Length: 568
Ligand SMILES: [Zn+2]
Image (cartoon, rainbow, N blue to C red):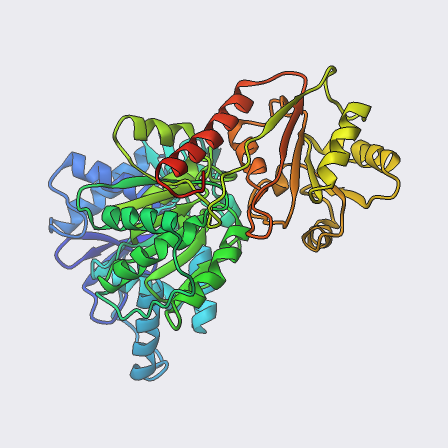
């Protein structure tokens, strides 16, 4: 998206996507003939401020001097002076009246409501124009009108910073530079999955909170918190009300029900007029939380934004979104509940972390929820920078199954199913279906074949992320149709299977860190019908990750026992 540099009758410099002013009352008297990118305009602005008494938008100066000054600056940037001329505005033409004023007001109201707290690319604005059934130029006019009123801003999607660049949507500095027609340009690859972000494009940024003030909220929980949840919920509430604390970590046992613990605090905050974001890295977690929010907050309008698809625009003070979708918000939320902070793709992504932090309003709060905290999270707790809230017990008051190490004489690989392993499997199968985790996709087929040979009467199958039959197999697994199911870490989270037993084959493989091991172990004993079960780590060596995983699980049990949350 490009803009025209404009001068008004007082000599003030501005910019607009339109040659003449945004409306007929505009005081714009001249504009530069060639449209420029927002990044170039920002650079001109920087130079003007440095050179003299010029101030964008606000202070006037002699128009002729300003015009010459701008041409000089653009020449230094590599523009050919003969391509650039200042044009005088003709009086605004009386164009057709368009839709009646009432209808215009409705559209304007809808636009302002749907863009609160958002930062939108040109592509996003185009999508919104389609949804509002208006022309692309009309949506630009609505956006520009808000910019002129000081309600919103245009910012370059990728800005020059010092000698480099920074993507304004995701904060990435490692961008791809390329020569455009007049100037060096840059494209961000880190956030391209939600649409292009280049220095030739602009973002429309509105920094308003999603809620205009306190709102009516009907909160009708369909559950009763367990003792463990109640204790954690009280502490979450204390944190949300505390004016000083900014971040907290809710460290929950796998399957302890951490999401509902936040609902009472969310209801309170909404009533106070605070906007809420529930974020998670993956779409399946969002799909899992959405019906629970609908059930417990009946009639409250909230937005569900998942995947990397283009934005769907809805109103409301509560948003449920994947961390990619959060990149389309800017200083919008007073409270963020960030679920599964240690999961892919959020974990280790600078862009998504930057996006989450910038979606928070000044003085807002983030509560991270996880069963397996990141080392940075634990470090912040140790340093006293982040409050720690524990939720160490499951609803059925039974301790978490502690993994048992089964030492293998040989390195476990995809080429051999030993008799040692076979006997273990028979024992486990007596307790329930066995979920076998392997470190690599290449292990799946050989192990399926091997199990089928060892146990000819058993139903054996397996799956991995790119398996076309994945969802139907997982459905059959939920139905309890398999005796043994071999999987990569795709099943380490977000799945509850009755009576399931877990084996981690090659638990010493570097792909299994302590978080993956705790999550895999956490599949066992989740339901009241089968609150116990076995977790076996099979490997030749005992790694540090395996030790830490066992230690974390034992610590949760110890903490739960001390608080009287599980039976001894
Ligand atoms: Zn980016």
